[in-house]
Image 1: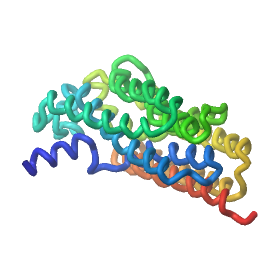
Image 2 (image 1 turned 45 degrees about the horizontal axis):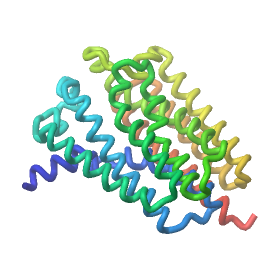
Image 3 (image 1 turned 90 degrees about the vertical axis):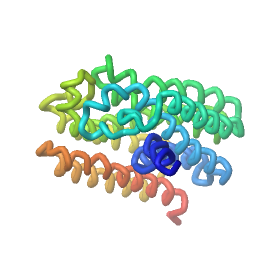
Image 4 (image 1 turned 60 degrees about the horizontal axis):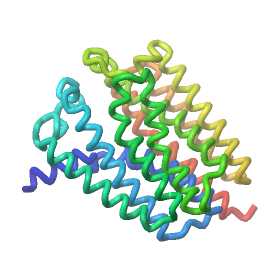
Length: 286
């Protein structure tokens, strides 16, 4: 029983919280800006728990779709489905449970947020398939990972203003940057088994593309901050995020897989300093 439970936890990637954090930070940026620094505690709880549930469901759906590929990739060959520690039927039942729990949370919010939860689910479920035909599936991932942004605005304000879509675009650029770092780790294996990724698409321009995406992310978020009236703490947060992006360049410049993976993991701090800038902009005395 303990072995099976451990397999379920690994299937949901609860042993690797980086995905939760990369999904959570943009949602928190949006929730704080939409609420002008004062989100309701109940709504905050719904979005945090919903993020954990949907990221877990997304991981299970991804592994169901990739189970025949994962067995041939060194980094993923021991995942529960690839290693046959969990059956496809069990994984499907777990997905349904996680989605049902997430939907029960969304039902506590307004009708617009409930309506937006359906495209959010579609994006999460269809992302694994995009690696078969999209040259840069990371862009699709950015939409899926960032859909908490319009949902947060909808829940807090009852509408989705233009600024929410600019934030979503910023998240797409950020996702391309960090997930290309991740894809650089698996590039050789992906080429062998026919999986597409931005690391393959960008080729020898991969590092340049990552840095351009980081720059676009920060420029778009600077526009968001200006339109939202955020102050100097937010500007400092963006400067800190820029410094982190430069550090990532230092890590990935030689394309060494372990260093690229470290850069990917380190994106948690990039999201965190931006969130700190948002929060402090609403509490700073001037």
